[in-house]
Amino acid sequence: MDFLVAKDDLHRCRFAHTQLAALDSGQALLSVQAFGLSANNITYAMFGEAMSYWSFFPAEAGWGRVPVWGFAEVVESRHSSLEPSTRVYGYLPPSSTLTVSPTRVEEHGFVDGSPHRAALPSAYNAYARVDADPVYDAEHEDQQMLLRPLFFTSFLIDDFLEDANLLSAEAVVLSSASSKTASALAFLLARRGGAEVLGLTSARSADFTRELGVYDQVVPYDEVAQLAPRSAVYVDIAGDAQVRKAVHARFGAQLKHSAVVGATHHDKMGELPPDLPGPRPAFFFAPDRVAKRAREWGRDGLQERIAAAWDPYVRWTEGWLEVQHGSGPEALQRAYLDLLDGRVDPAKAHVLSLRA
Image 1 (cartoon, rainbow, N blue to C red):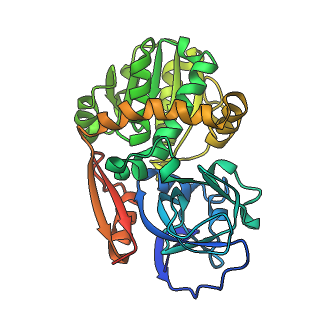
Image 2 (cartoon, rainbow, N blue to C red):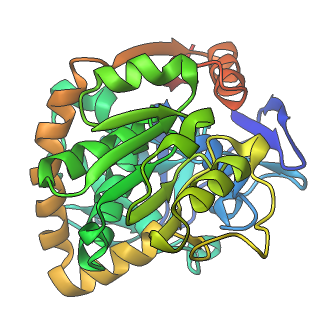
């Protein structure tokens, strides 16, 4: 079973049953056990064409499978180095199964070498064996499905800001401050100290965002003009054109960098006006950062740094994150549409399975 979304209207969705083809030599069949669903997945859908997210898990013409992160088990294998019952974590379709062509099969996992994924960012093609994954913790599987990809993005942004000497600014301004990507970044920045961390959010989410305790100041979107002008960096996770315009107008030439990360306000993205004050917004593409650090630190060095930062973060989330579990097609469709329309409490998150 596959959960399909219309590429030209993300509100149109349906389920389709497909006949599994026999495995070719060298292939393996994964059974998708469970996966997380958050605003991050809506960003994948919004940038499905522009960033090739639809290409990872092809579907029939006009339809796409929104990528998710979760756990799967090898239920059949025609690869001599990959045994059935091997459990992995990685990038999956919202489907009941996934056929992969494992390459570079090693103790820590493998890479899907399916031809249609060859030209896609390698960071999304790797599958980690849970018994050899330095981040894996059986007690925090839900958090891993929901937060690990978001935290990974936040870790990379934090690393980029420090590496580019952008944290010499007096403030780092984050939009969609109640989102899990933003709060993870705020958590990392707060641990560094230095620049003030300013969170922009909706009026209804302001109290929750303040209570997270990782922002120096939380400001509703309609009060951006009241922020004190100073040197700043803007990390745009909302993707809201009006908020972007207000932030650029407030900080102007004092804005050292404007990074576009997500689109939680996907219905308000708009176009970049040619007269936007300050620097032109630049898209932050996490796989490029992964490739850079993997070259410099080595794959193991990168994973060790992430694991060291992940543990205190995930324990911090235990104080506020409420995981909601759901199974079956109806639960998945309802959760997806609620996220698409912004009806999910920022303190809650979904872990889902197509298994009834």
